[in-house]
Amino acid sequence: MMVIAHAGILSGFPGIESVPGPELPKIDSLTRFNEENQKRYAENDARFRESPLLKELLERSKLNKEK
Image (cartoon, rainbow, N blue to C red; front, side):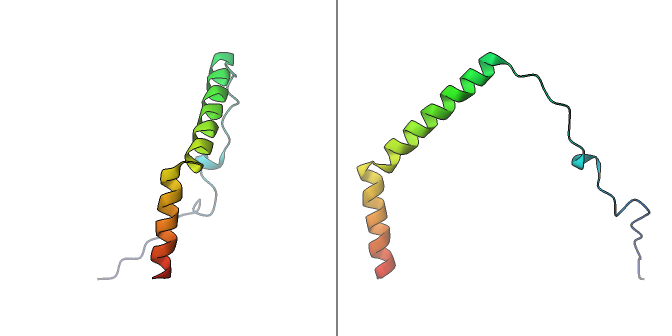
């Protein structure tokens, strides 16, 4: 038995997910908290990139690729 599905008249139109929502109010304390976190994450990322462990693992990876 063959079943044919019909998409319907609105199938080619974007749904509600494409409609932008309202602009939410900015909360100063949350903005400051977010900025502090972003700064902390950037510092941690920089420290990790310079860590001896990461350098050793990258060197091992490079040597394994060459094998």
